[in-house]
Length: 229
Image (cartoon, rainbow, N blue to C red; front, side, top):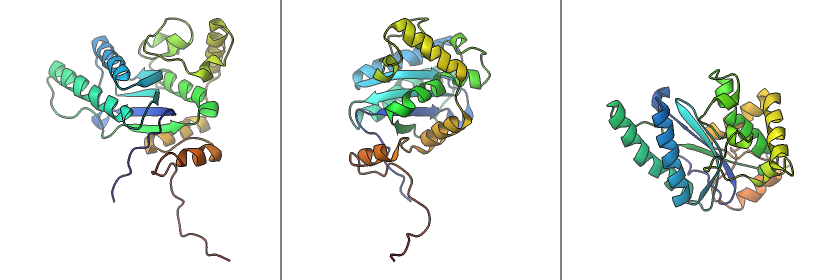
């Protein structure tokens, strides 16, 4: 069975995931994390991708992005791979692929899911037990969103700006949301949507997005269709 084309819809939010091959580490030290972020920044500018949030974990990474067209996201990921994989292989004396197959990308509806998705992404190090406070993990955009530093890689999304009229209000509100955490149901939805590369959103959003692409945006229903009556 031919695999489905990747679902990328211009000017819509996408949650992007890429894992290391066989779960192996893809970032060994601060130099690796820093080098990857430099490549990511250059590629985002080159292919007109807005990056709203990110986290780099030792064996995988997440982005929340808005691509400006149907091809830019794929080109960005390909370009990063062509830069980072040779760098990492030379440094570690390894050969071959670094990533576990194609990257995953799922369009998400902004109003209900952007902030939970941002919490999901930036809360990853805490859920994995790497830190007790997300602010202690230097390789994510969390510090930017709570005002601890300005990250030039980040393009703030309008939904984030709606958290308050001032930077202090936005930062405090988001920090409180992170303290409250996400329900297991939301975490499961985020995970399944991204891993399976299906759109995450309401039925009306699904219908609107289906008009913009020839690819299915949600899985087909299982079983035989009902007989007419």
